[in-house]
Amino acid sequence: MKDPGKKDHQMIERLPEPGQSEMDRMDLEGAMETYQSALLRYAARVLANDAAAHDVVQETFIRLHGNWERIRAKGVPLRGWLMRTAHNVAVDYIRKESRLRLLHERQSRLSPPPCSAGDPGGRDERMALVMRHLNTLKPKEREVLVLRLQEEMSYKEIADVLGRSEGYVGTLIHAATRKLTQSLRKAGVLS
Image (tube, rainbow, N blue to C red; front, side, top):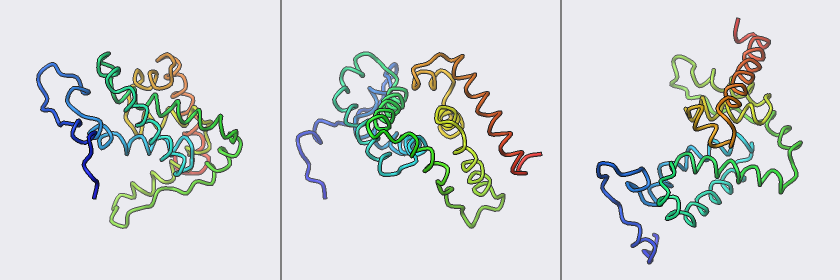
């Protein structure tokens, strides 16, 4: 069991008040509970390495802790800040490890998500097939589709994460969608 320390006592749950930002309504622990899964999914898809994804998310939350008050004072949207930071940490990881080529090879061999036996419509099976084809795209194309489709982020949110314009994001999403559709047609999944 976790020993309650000084920091635990400082993390006081706040009730939302009208006009409060997301940061005003939650503490650091709440932010971790709310966004950890999404960040892990995102980092795992970008890196194709679960252990590295956990490291990236851990570093993202460490940075959040160090910048909490400053982010809060500026009223920066928390989700966007976290995704942007996870993106930056993931890019730093790739650069530091100098494994970009190896990353592509591993991503092409990435196993699909497990299918649930109780899935009458075969949604999980279709999703696994799409994810396998998604892994054939370039990293930036894959990244924008994951953010758009899996994380349901807007073009503006994706642009903020990537540090690019919304037009660039739109162009990249269009190109990635076209390539993914062609790949699925070639495999006989789409007609």
